[in-house]
Amino acid sequence: MRREREENLRLAAAVAEVEGLYSALLRAGSSDRRRLRAELARAARRLAATAAMPSQPRSATVRRTRRGRRRALAQRGVAWITARYGGSTS
Image: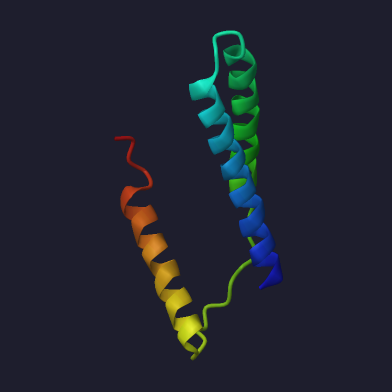
């Protein structure tokens, strides 16, 4: 459980970095744009590398607690959305 939280935090930090740099790029003057684009590209590569790291296999059993059931349903929903819309480029 702790390892999964750490993976999620690393991924969230990488996403936040990309979002912050993109927001700064939108508000930047012309002199800072080139530097921010380069930083944004590096942050995007780090995000892709972080997202591509294999996660630890999760057990297939569902806990009988309310939290366990909700988590399993959320994971199933994410898997469905990813399978349905993840590959589209529109």
